[in-house]
Amino acid sequence: MTGVALYFGIQSRTLYSNWWIESPVMFFVAVFLVVITLAVALIQGAAFRRLYKYVEQELGRTPGGELPKASVILPCKGLDPAFRENVEKLLNQDYPDFEVIFAVAQDTDPAYEHLVDLAQRTSRPASVVVAGVAKGRAQKLNNQLHALEHVREGSEVFVFVDSDVIARPDFLRQLVAPLCDETVGVTTGYRFYIASVTNWASILRSLWNRVTAWEMANPKYAFAWGGAMAIRKSVFEKTGVREAWDKAADDDLSLTTAVKAHGLTVRFVPQCLVASDGDAPFAEIMEWTNRQLILTKVYYPDLWKRAIVRASFMLVWLVLMVVAITGWIATGESSFAMAIGAGFLLIPVEVYFLLKARRLWQRVLLDRQEYLTESLLSSCLAIPLAHLVLPFMTLASLLTNRIQWRGVTYELVSPTETLVIS
Image (cartoon, rainbow, N blue to C red; front, side, top):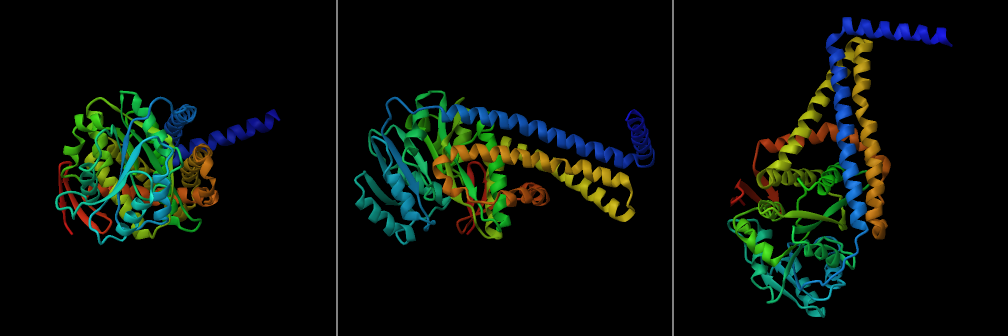
């Protein structure tokens, strides 16, 4: 056995020596690919440990204490899937005292008649306001600001929710309770897209979105999500959120920036993770991804720069892999094959963290397991595809500040100036 080991050791050393001498460029390519893989493993490992510890801590928390009067603001445009059911879940929250204010741009909106009917049927205080068509800011913000003019006296908390949120019965209670900590500026849930097995564009969005969700456990990069966020009225006024929204195209990231500028934190509430239907056509997915990146670029540049750095490294990885694969096909040299093998080490690392994160999210969504019907195999197979597509989609945000949002085109001149193009 010792002789066999010695023989293979000599052969391996000879191969290594020959490779180093004959193909020094490919040697350094392989080393760089291994370095990227190790860096990804270390960074994702640290991020997952932080996320796991945070979620464990939050799931063990029981909302207690006195819950303040709240005003729930729900801006609407059009009818999302299961629209009435979603709104009814919000109206039937297990929360002692809250009102709901629905806001639409025009009374011709398809949602208007449904909202009027639901407001009349509920025993909760509920009303519908018509905000008018926005001229110098996003329509969603226009609806929200108009709704804020109609909140009742005595409300101490503003809760902003999207119409596609599928809220569990204690959703409001979980979202509002952490605001008793005066260091917390805003609490937030987050979306969790579920994609069909064969909808590859939607699977990519789901993967991209879940990686972003890991940032929610990082105090430095955590941000509010406009689909489910709560803020004390006093903090909303003190931090100047209303003024930040006046000519903006974004609600949550501009609120995040305003709150953090005053030394307050963003508190992610895992119990308010929202499972959403993630299926959409490719063009819609592209539009959505472009919008998220450009909004982040304008309103939360620190997080956007982090995404650009990550995309740049992944692009370098992709270029080196293409060089190695092309060289191997053209020459058949073992040095190219070894570089390819070094690069592909990244895939099992990412599959490993996908599996660990999936188990964690299943615990968070324990009472909503019916939404976890996606194919694990499809998600794993989509990882290489993500490396082919997502770096380019991310880096494309360097080139423009124009976005599409529910049929309206906006040009984001600055955080305080938005042009409505059409």
